[in-house]
Image (cartoon, rainbow, N blue to C red; front, side):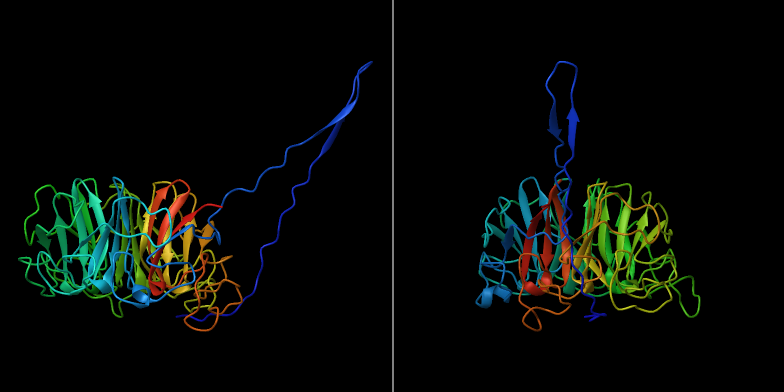
Length: 431
């Protein structure tokens, strides 16, 4: 964790003055009208979560609630959740399962209705088969299918149709069959995929250890081991080194390179990739159509060559404290509704919100979840003194985060955030 420079700040109350306006007329009565006060605009900034999933209350953080795996527990989940057709899919990575909730939980400590990757809701066996996972992440449903990144098995598994109860995977990508887990750098292989996103018949996978993004343009009839159609971050399917800019030495970052990509979002037109170890997010303004295609916009840095975390003055070195412009290991969590953009800024223990989709490099975020302002970054720091409350690892609250790495927009005023080190998901509403 970046401890950062400790900067203490506060948010002041803004008083809205009312204006008395006198009016009168000949022979009539005179009086005054009080102008209506403008209510404060709802914001996500330091909002308190309304619901916690995986814990009994907002102050608890133990994996599996300090006991054994159950329908209401989580153990350090990695990756984006998904909420489609009334079903909430949550990755429960250390328990080697993906949980399904038949309805969006409205109260704390909700229970899942089914699990994928386990025979029941009380098992957590790791394995490799059509029925087992080894650290699943980022379930994503689209076009009647559910896709899950199976991290340690170096694969993506496909459920067809989208499951509404326990089911076995039907197809695997990255392996020749559902019983294999070989690591490979090829057009059909993968190495520790962290995240994926399915949309408009396409599948986009962050093939993280291979420092690339793989794209399948048509998921309608996938077969085991199907070859990817496009690769980003590399000139071809046989190269997999970090920041591989056509063999330049030493390899610099550029608009077409990646260093451990670990988060994906797309609407089928725009594409966002969290380039985690380069401490940036890359945006393609139109969906890529060729290998090695460069990104158009970068967030977290002012240009495509800079890579330092929390580098507000862009001198190539970290400045310690975050700002509204900077990122520090953005990880897994990214979502958009086409207008707003949410990014989980993991090492800064916050989620950044852009209220208009960014179109320029180094654009500043508008709102922040998990901190009271843009210069705080400690985990579980409800009193905002720059330190975890009650000492490391900190006591969580309804407003704090510790290594967030999943986010999904629910509607115009609410979002669900994966709070990994606190072994929970939180639902936030604008307040």
